[in-house]
Image (cartoon, rainbow, N blue to C red):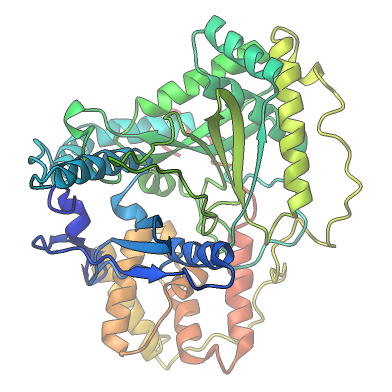
Length: 526
């Protein structure tokens, strides 16, 4: 399999913060066997080891982006565990791998060489094709996104139970709900009548629930779009997906109209693939905030393919559930189909939400879907007016704040300045900024992300700072201190002078407050 899919042999080192791919020569794949036959509690030990394997940290610069382990539970019972890094793998790739593994295994059992024929395309071909497409249409697509999201809010704050940590955490927990049989039937009928998909119906219902929870009628969610637009890439393992913003506006609509809006929104998002999310965030001027992901804090992901199964000749196989290792967003909503019925699974951050809040949210969503799909032509806001149900939970005091954020500005006189107005560290950082951003000058109080910086550029700054200072510097610190002066203060003395770190955090908190993307003026300028 690693011979056929070269992306599984990739190493991704970096030079001055800029990553690049190197394809290693084919070699045997290490498959360690862990014997659990003598374990006192095999199932518990297996579950612990599978969870640890799913959370395995990869060193993409030096090692392969996947690992394989076999767990032996008995003489005729084994578990094959495979972990792939998302940089080289997506959900569609799982089916490709299972098919290739089954074909190769069948050939080996029959005494034939297990090697499979070479594919007509490789992931590197996709990268070249995509780069050409994005160069051709990127500016036009970016202009469309800027206009489409004009005036949209940049933060979606769902009710939560604890203050948001000042630095985003990635803890994960799971919950799920399945639609009742009547609700599932009504959703499918409505989707057919409106000429759209179950996903559009559920997105409309979720958007209406969010509107009721927040009191707003305009929200930006993220959606996952598969980029396998050419048949040549159907059987190629790799990462072919994009996260795109989806604007859901619920004011003054019947549910049927809201479904149509969401269907159109998903179609338009798919039709403008030339501008990746990073460029959209940069073009909109969305400030970076260490407390949350930029622009998209809630993700809506449609798993519109059946879960693949591994079919090995002469063996019976069944999937083993493994918890997801974390949540990169506040909440990720997965639209799934299990046993012929639609449902919703969510991964959420337990540092923000109690399990009971998420369980109640899903129960409310299922009931709201049922009611809305049954009366699609009534004003959506008038349907099932008792949802979401009032809660008796009392969230922690200040739950809707950012932990550690303070409203006051930095006290005067705390930031260091040399005789010429710049310290040595400030001069170093400013020089690196000028080099990376290709600017003649930068101000010590300029925000990196306001003067053309973005995440990849910050990675280049990070690498150059480490090389110049010989120090271990966390990438997070560059996000937390996005000005030359604040970063220099952090590097030079924040550990000994905590007031400097607090001052920088207060500045970051002020920038990170909820804001809306300013409407575009005539002529296309923001």
